[in-house]
Length: 254
Image (tube, rainbow, N blue to C red; front, side):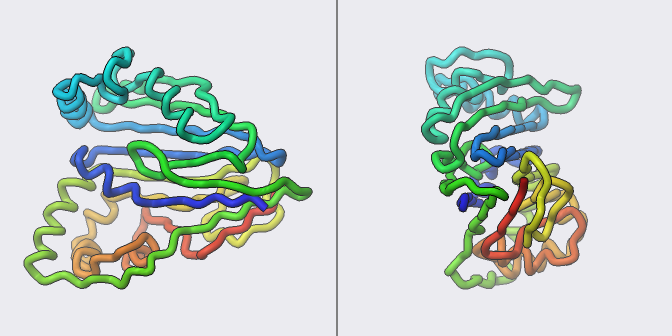
């Protein structure tokens, strides 16, 4: 078995960037347990400028640690190599490509790993925190343990709801987050809710879809969910939102 534990504390760490953030993290897995992680981060020019200004005030280039080479915009290869060192034994930085359009900038980075058992992933949009382990087989089998909250929902007062809705409008504008696993070969069996060919999507959220639905937004603010699973129930039926509901996802492939 292979175990992939995803910690979706993601959205909260993006708050300081005030929205306009698109994050995609795709784990591409081979039957022998090796594979790659493709990580893409894109944000608006305005948000990137604010981030660079904040980083400069601390003596750092955006996307890097103090003393790191500034590279180009948000892309900092030294910082990405340091990130690879935190992702587990055998994880290596492979390449990175700058993304630069009229309205946005960012990068796509590729990391490789030799053994998924040793891989540690961070589902934080800004960096990483997940653990993986398992063994190989024929057909290969991947098990994904989805996080479950033990905390009960904490309904908010009308005043708190109003504040939450205003904050969400500012923070989540244009934000998109995708986390998925893509296997090399054909999926022979899976209980995943969102499967497309060889890809299983664990979370995909287009926050503009939520922001364009005032009733759903109000319902979310009122319910004050403590986990993605609770959020899923509140967001049921909303186009642009996919959150795996099973506590454990199994994928067999060859």
